[in-house]
Image (cartoon, rainbow, N blue to C red; front, side, top):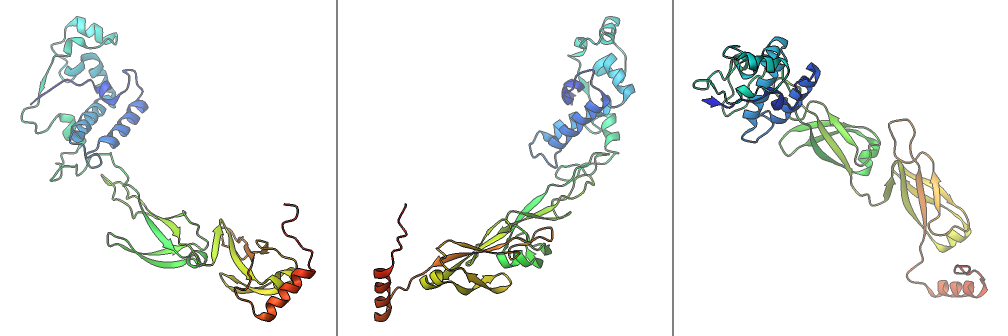
Length: 312
């Protein structure tokens, strides 16, 4: 088949005076983007071959020198006029060779370097290269959600997990893991290409809403209902925690939304320090009053001068 001339520098997107490092970086970037096992564009394989051909020539100092002097006919070095050769030495574009076509026969053994680059290995059935020399690429990372109750996130420990693709894992959950945090399972992502390592599987933690507790970072908040007289006179009440319940003193004269701090009763973190638990006072009144209760509240209303709206 007839193959149109390709300028190797244009193929890699580098100037003619590019250094070896610039050529290597350009090749690696383009090869990753266009490798047919990664890029499903129908033209990706042709682009990958062209990129690899250009790199095979330009990375070799002797081949590159010949290419710079003779252009497309660098292998033969024949049929070149002295004027064209002088132009090549000056670094001028090889305009005299732009119309040259190279015939590779029936396409087997696309070029000498290409057989060498792939060590004589054929492509896999259905496309994609079975091996491509020193080029390898790490597999992609995968991500899945891991739903935990607040208690599970607080305590940590091992948990069995089944993914939609049928894979089962026993995951070690760190105590105090936070919502949105990722747990890494090394090597459990997509398989690598060309002998490259597999990617990782990341489990993104989603902590389910809890009926009792609200979390803000490492701190927890829980509402504690109290009666009007407990709030006014003070009382000792039970406050739930993630490890049972604790007795907490509600100071006399407490209003709704007052926060009572329980140090170290929140979530753990990567360090030894734990967050705090805040018991939030919520004053509740009875929906129905007995005759005696009503009488007492009416008497309190008569004798009390307290006005919560004063000064608003």
